[in-house]
Length: 232
Image (cartoon, rainbow, N blue to C red; front, side, top):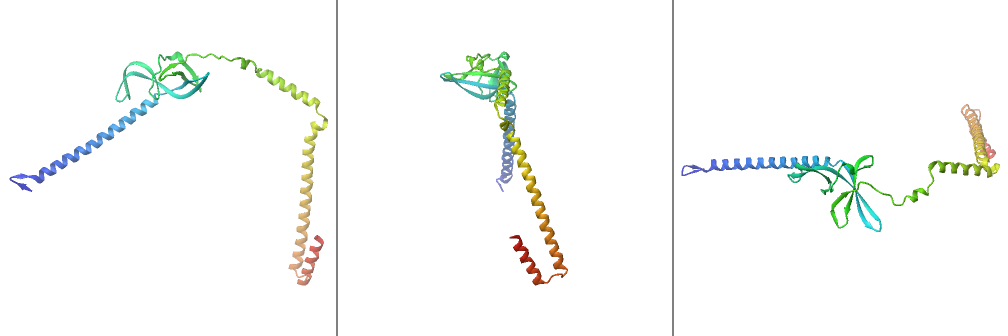
């Protein structure tokens, strides 16, 4: 449609084309942004390689242990903290808390991997410090337990003493009972087998006689009744 020498239809089509193009490229830009965020997050998660055990005091000498992971990152970060580009190396937990004054001398062996054990400040859960060494305060409990060699020797002595005080029947009764059960089972199996064999032969002879017409139907019925009475 043209009015006053101006083609409004052409202008409308051009504006619609620009809007469609801008919308299309806007969607592409959003998709690229989301994919980039996802890749950076996965890259950051993979850097949490060290097992970390957090110790929290509960009072009266009791503690709570929480398992997480930690990784080394540079102190200066950009892009929502997903890219670290400069600064000192810091040991950060998976929930983005810094472990104060951490170094390689603080590592322990956790489930066969190099890890770190940290203590959380009771009045400020954001402050974590590494625990370099431990001291066991009740080793007397371990001292009360005899070494493994002594325990094995004591068990052997007790078993030998029990055997010496047992009667002949207590020592051999189990084997005798087991042998008796096996012999009884074999005898029962032989009896059942012979009985089944005799029954099968009798029925086979009767079937042959009936099939060859050697006995009449009344005689067959009488023979069956007689056989049943014998069995009773």
